Each structure stands twice: as C-alpha cells, then as structure tokens.
Length: 470
Ligand code: IUR
Image (cartoon, rainbow, N blue to C red; front, side):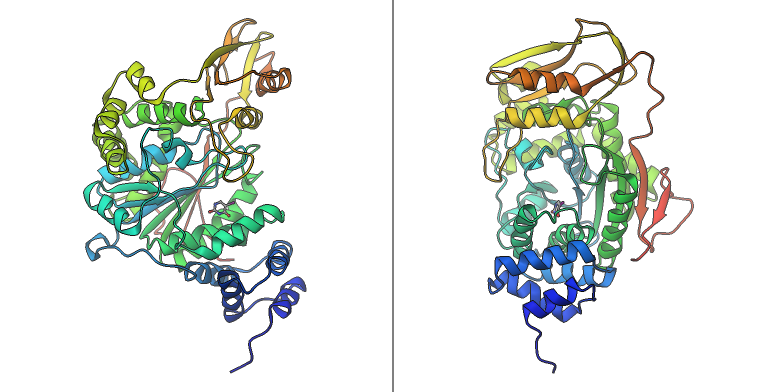
C-alpha cells in the first residue's frame, strides 16, 4: 500500500491544480474531524479548492468523506422512499420550510428537516420557529424518529454528531473568504443530507442581488453540481433556480414570517410564497412516487394547504417540539389578533411614507434585509441573540402607483431608528416615472438529474436542464 501523503503534500497538489484522489480527500477530512489538521492547513486547503476547483468525482468524494465523519440517521424500513427534505441557499423573507414540511407530511412523506440559523442578511428557519414560545429546535435522533412516527415532520438544528467535519470547515470558510465555492457548498450541504439518509431532496438555489449566487448562470452551475453529486449519493435530487432580488412574500422578520407562513398553511398568503412551496413540494412528491408527475404533485400539495391538513400537521409538529398545546392551537386556529397575542409585538410599529410619488419598480431585498439585520432580525456573529419581533411588512408591490405621503413599509422595531437606517430603508423602494416592464418569473428554471425521464406525463412546467455531470 502506498504511504499516506502528508497534509502539506495534499495542499501543494491542489494548490498546483492537480486532482486529489478519493483516499487523499478522506485523509484530509479525517485530519479535520480528529483535530490533527492545523487551522492554517485547513484554511490553505480551502483556499486551494476555492481557487482551483474540484471536479465532480472529487466533490462527491469530499461529500462522502464529510458525511462519514459522524453518525448517520437510521429510519424504519417502511419509510424507504418517503424520506424527503428541502434546502435553500438563503434568501430574504424565505419562510417556505415552515409551510412545506407540514404540507409534505400531510401528503404522506416523512420529513426530517434539518435547518440552519440566519447569518448575514439572510434569515434562518430555526430563528423563525424560535419566535414561537416553547419551540425546541434541539432533538435527538430518537426524538426525531418518534416525532416523524406521530406527525410526519420535524424541523431541527444540526446535531453535533451529524457531519462534524462540516461544522469545522463551514466555520473556517466563513473567515477565509471561501464560502462561495461550488464544490465546497455542494459537499457541505450534501454531506448533511447524506447523513440524514434521505430518499429525495429538492434544492432552492437562489440568485440575484440578495442571494449567494449573483447570476442565474452561477446558480445553474451550483445547482448542477448539487444535483449530480446528490444523485450519486443515492438521493433523488432536483433543484429550482429562483430569483432573489425582492423579498419573498410581504413580511421579513422572524415572528412576522411565522404569521405569513400560517396564512400559506391556511390556503392563502402571498401568491409567490405559495408558488414556491407547491413547486418545490411538487417535485418531491413526484420524486418519491406519491404523484405521477410534477403538476399532479403541485396540485396534491396545494390541496393539503387548502383543506387544513397541512395546518393540522404544523400544529402537531409544534406540540411535539415543545410548544404548549393551547399555545399551538391558538396560533394555528386563532384570529390574527390572537396569533399576534401568542407571538407578541415589537414595542414600536411605525409606517414609512413614500417620499416622492411614482411607479414602484421593485422593493430591493438587500438594503431592506441589511437594515432589519442591524435592528435585530439577524446576527452579526454566530451565537448572537436575535429579536424575534423585529421585522417589516411591505405595503406596496412592483407595478403599483404610489403618491407621496402614502405608507409603503410597516416597520416593527424596538429602539431608535437612526437617520442612516431610515435613509437606507427609503433606498429600498425603487420608483420610476412609468410602470415597470413585466417582471421575469420568480421561478426561472429547474435542474433535474440524468435519471429523470423526459417528457410528459410529469414534465415540470418550468424549463428544465439536466445536471451535466461535471
Ligand atoms: N448551507 C450549508 O449547509 N452549507 C453551505 O456551504 C452553505 C449553506 I453557502
């Protein structure tokens, strides 16, 4: 057997643009997991990968090695084929998971959803759920299994034991400017999904001014990498490319987004939110065989939202994850006032007026999210506390004509709003002298694996491109 190459040798190899073998990648990940690799060495390898890239085989080997660095979840045989999850690369106002997980459970799936916290200007599903009094995001694998048995879905944080190498690598990527590397993103996301032992996965890869991927081309490159590697890890994988220039829905901020997700779970809420929930869910229902095609899957998911079964699953999930039953019931079935009573309200609620009349071209997600993050919806550093009741409701939409003095944003906050923050918020409202051109669809494209049969029945309505196997 050949002697194991030292870590500096592996770093040099990648630095010089050579391909790493599977056993070399495993050896690097072992060093990361066992703590024998120094931080400087890990950082150097991350930067070499960021600059030189990895081919599909290397990325697959990295995802496998990272998945194997910890424990895998185990599920009853009877759930084979039904275990599904969704992952988003992060957006503003993205409360899709809150509605999608229970809707999928109502359709017969098992959804062990492992979510993250917000970092930077993007929100996190766990922070939104923690706006609900009593909700516990920490659940052991045994507790997850019990909740899936009773309810069909849970939404939890990543445990220490699941893909621990990712925890180390992700933390170091954040401080070494190596977050935006397709192979590193791919291996990070899929190592956790592989350890979850999923049957099917759908990815919401966002692109635009408030997304990780600035352009549709870069989102497609990432989506193709995710789909190609995901399929080879044995997970039926599909990705939707969705635009993230404007917030999703009308609300941004943790407790406000819970309220909007509840509207979606009642069959209402903003159309763009419902469209994304049913598009992602439709793909999953098709991939796990519970629908004959994507349109049928979308229709089935829409029915679960309209007939109250998704809301019922959400209430059961809240109860199973620590929310007192009467609180969960009031939140799920109460009037808007009763719901606000459960979640509480920020101490200051004020409406911002339009300064100069015109046609709304768009409400830019990034400046809005940055100000809200500073006001407390998000955190500057991992571990900071968030203010669950801080947020904003959009009162206008692109294409609408507004006059000076009309309110356009209802802001919920808990302290003084500086002049700079006020100006930055006003900058998010983009006005023009004429109506804007028709906006491009929010859902731009789907990326499917090579094993997906083309053509009807079951062809997604979105233009599809196959993962190209790089
Ligand atoms: N979420 C992950 O789990 N990993 C990543 O690299 C990114 C988002 I970016």
